[in-house]
Length: 288
Image (tube, rainbow, N blue to C red; front, side, top):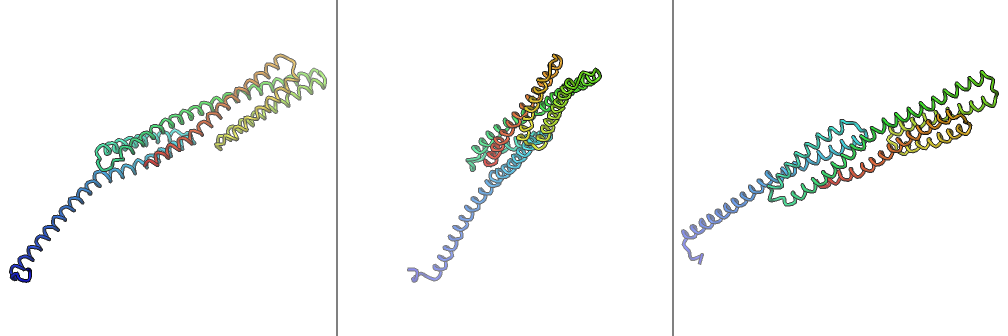
């Protein structure tokens, strides 16, 4: 049929075919442009802001974790203040991504992601509050330990002075070698008590500086040596006033030990909290 057509008709049919193909290609191009424009709009209004905000939130979470970890270790207020500032930025970022989650139609998981992040952050803040409580308690206990240590050393020094005074009196009165020997043994014993007390304080400060609770616990064992020395002195003591002095020394030592026990307990509790808090922080990062 095509062979029998006139040349003019063949040419017309050819041009018509080309025109139809051109129109079809144009329609396809318009559709593709609309699709591309729609995708570009999604990228510009939804995906790009979501990625940008997620990146900012991740940075804030890392800063929060770093500041609180530093605060837990150094107990320096500046780190806690930095945490507060970063938390405020974090809350702003969460507010922005929440609005985006409400508006978006193409990121269905965003709402769930934001809810999970907010839950983890809320739990993390509870742990931060506990960390601050532990730090405040430790600071107060340091003051208590210093007070009790001074009281202990004061009582021991007072007893030493009383025995040195008595030694001079006994020597002036020529009471005999036995009496003098007993006083010298008491003086030797109380000097041992004072030396042990100094060792406790050195171990206390050194273990804190090294952040070593095991060494702190070892320093506390020295109180056993102190009690042994006090009981040895007591066995040689008959005067009520001297027995009362020894009771004061022992009581002061027990008070110092009690303060150290509370400090160690709080220190260990904070260390356990740090592990849990770090895990919760990592959970926030994984959500990102």
